[in-house]
Image (cartoon, rainbow, N blue to C red; front, top):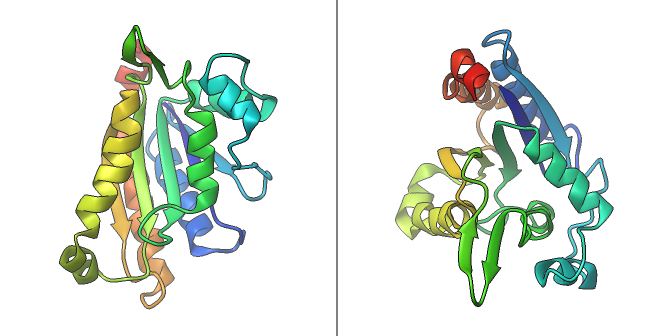
Length: 205
């Protein structure tokens, strides 16, 4: 099993980066058939802006730009996609949202036409979401943020493409709790990611 872990945070020493690395440690420590790759969108300089070139891809008038094709190839090599991101304004950062806007393009993640309707093209992809939140669980429950994020991200993005969201975790109180608690939780998430696709299943796939 190969997992692609995508992290979006401008600081390499951030808790988000530490959590992404810890998820990878959990994956790697679960058995010989499991490996992972970390895509650090900020360090790699990914441009999240949806431009005329991306619009042409959406309209099936042009091939994807090189940076988008590169990201699509990384996802194609993966059995599992893990997104690690801090919660900004009750959603993911613009860098990660722009990555999704550009990479999960018409013709690759889904196929839509006025005459043909919608074809979901990522039914093989398993997704794990790891959000890093400053607020506590009560705040999310009181204001309905759980449902809002589920509708926006799990249903609005991944279900539309046919991908299966296996797990959606929110690590709360990131600014007040000990970082070690979150890193331990992230390693446990990595082990769960591995357990969701045993080696025998990976060999048969």
